[in-house]
Image 1 (cartoon, rainbow, N blue to C red):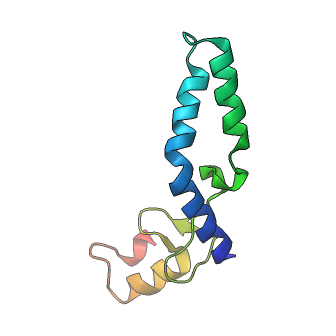
Image 2: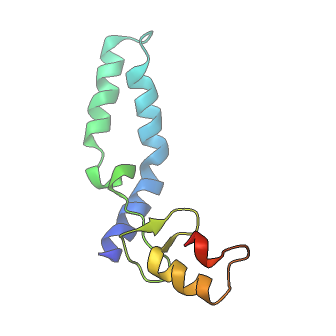
Amino acid sequence: MKNRDYKRRNLFLLLESKRKALNVVAANQNLNIFLRWWAQLEKSKLPRQSSICRVKNRCIETHRSRSVINVYKLSRLEFRRLASRGLFLGIRKSSW
């Protein structure tokens, strides 16, 4: 599963600028309708796996995909384990 997510992240990085440029052209009401249609057609030819919505947040330690704290990029279990060792400044038991 983590290999699939890794591939999706790489595809997103490769095709992000192209997708954004095509989105701008397709959404611009001042351009010719045929140019906008072409941009929409080119956007639909891009692989679906390269979209940002396909990328899953994962814990960087355990690669767990559920209950990931976005600020730390850790799962709640790993965060709790590291916080109990005192590796995060300012984190107390009451804030877990």
